[in-house]
Amino acid sequence: MYKNYELDEVRAVAKLILETLKGRILLFYGEMGTGKTTLIKELTKQIGVDEVVNSPTFSLVNEYLSKKGETIYHFDFYRIEDETEAYDMGIEEYFYSNHWCLVEWPDKVENLLPLESVSIQLSINTDGSRNIQIKP
Image 1: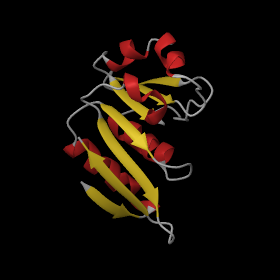
Image 2 (image 1 turned 30 degrees about the vertical axis):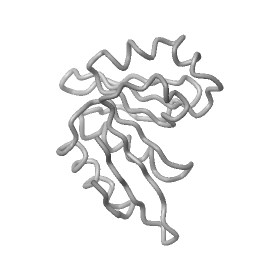
Image 3 (image 1 turned 120 degrees about the vertical axis):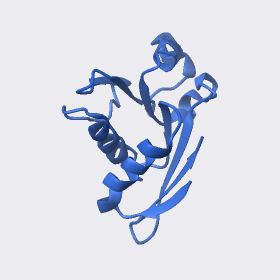
């Protein structure tokens, strides 16, 4: 799926993602400022998370609980130097927990990613609109 959207349409984009994807491990690719965290905030909101969602840049992972009792893990691997850091934190246990896993900068842990992940590529256009491409 490919879509061009404005930032004020992020709610509709998140809804579309949740309605069409098959899987709970979402990998968010894109340069700094393309809207990865903004989209993740909206996705978690629609999944039912009431608390404030922030990128876990320094802690590597934040855990949220939805109103329905669903666990959501939000990862940000921007600052890791080596995949062993993610491995040492038990990344495989998170990925195979059957919970939501929303991963920013997945290219930093490429060899540890499950095959059944959904790839979400974000980019920004010169007019400020965004492109999103989703690959199962």
